[in-house]
Image 1: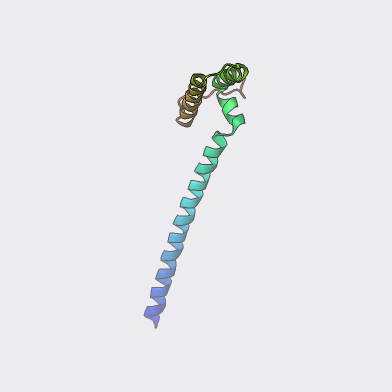
Image 2: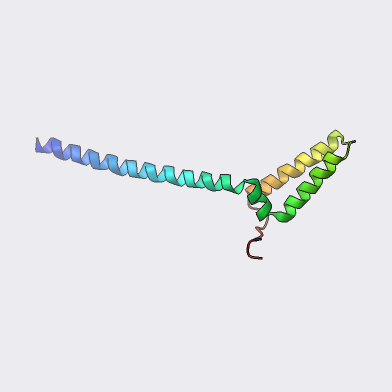
Length: 101
């Protein structure tokens, strides 16, 4: 009888440790995903990459305002946008701290 109780206590302790590890992993993944989503908010992108934001806005305005836009301009804009997103995703551009100015 004592042997069974000790075995059950041991299994219960192992289950508690496993649950704690799982909760820790889930919390770490949630925090990482929240940070990733926060980095792609438009306000954050504009604030952390002001020069790139101005260039993209200018290119968008030019293409949108030009009535004779052909498929080449759309492809160029798509390439520019994908390059910017790729660089931001990989932290390729230097972060500019605009809040300290």
